[in-house]
Image 1 (cartoon, rainbow, N blue to C red):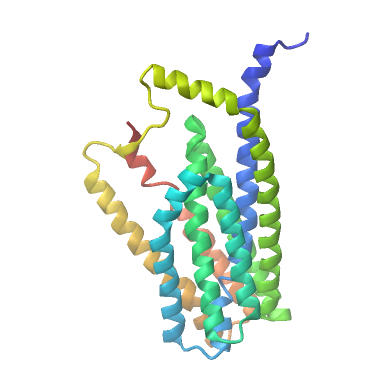
Image 2: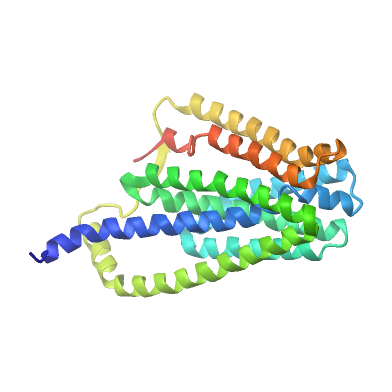
Length: 296
């Protein structure tokens, strides 16, 4: 028996959602792996360039400030420009960051790489969470998948960068991360071209839907606001997130330096950072702020 057109229409949204989720998971793995390969060796590389502990801490703190200052702007850009374009820009930030790391002979160029790495984080994750939330009722499942892929990719990257740095030097890790960033840029570029074709094909349908919503006085998009009585919980979540990020930032900045000072090999330093990152990511549930919001 041949399925009718109605059956095909019912199946297509699920197929599109599954393909989109697979795309987000693969992209998250690639960019997280690429960015994760620079994290464990950056403090060691900066120290090899002559930086003191104080200077390394200041550079890492500056990167966190860049992340905090640009994240809200990047979220708005994702709403205006689209998720895929922000994925392209964040992947390009990885390429520029790892290039700066690879060619750095002074602390200034390494600091520039750290700043670009922070721009990647600030631009990628708001767009990724927004893309996951656009899945509607499957938003929780989508977030769960990408937040599972992220620590796995980061753990694998930390272990791999320790092995590479121990045998070929820090710049080998940066070179491998650069290759991953280029692969992400190419993949997102292909996805953007396909997306434009799909958007061109569905443009008339979207216009008709928009006109129908306006005629009925409906809003095509819904805003989000806090649940009634959730402001104290929201404030507590902000404080908890701030404290957690401070502790994690200090750990990832100074654990590699301390481990090397204690005589630990670089291979084991990467594995140590990877295990800690794996536990830190899986300990925190994705989207605590999202649970306090609802569409209005």
